[in-house]
Length: 217
Image (cartoon, rainbow, N blue to C red):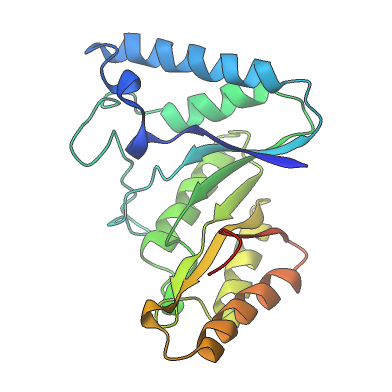
């Protein structure tokens, strides 16, 4: 079984997304047509069970009460003016893919690192909660989990975060976990971080996927 990754990544779009047109309505139409073509190509492929529909649209400086969405890369704003792109693309995905495929929002640094629920963790949670309240067809959140020994969630904090997503009907996936040794004093410290996250996921019924980022760390 496979995971489709990803349909739209506003911060890292190819140049032909950025330069297609200066008119946002033309750009919007072009991207929708592109995504629809990709989805229809794989529509009958039963081996794909998840699609990461949107990747990393919440900006790093966002907080629970101030959700800022990307409108392009660090040096561009090619999607400025398309304020509903997340809602539009999730709905587009639902209409153009096998009904059994689950649709996921994927992002990094939103895992309650060091017990912080009010920064980007809170922003991503409320962003997804707002979509659910608008009946946008989102099934899950992908927590990328690029962490380190001094910047990672504890077992209790991650378990609590998974529970909060369960309350709003959103399943949790750990999608890209790696633990850099650059800020670990020993391999044991690195192992402990991995195990805390692994156990929090596997001990919770709402954590459905655990994927390691690469074959080695």
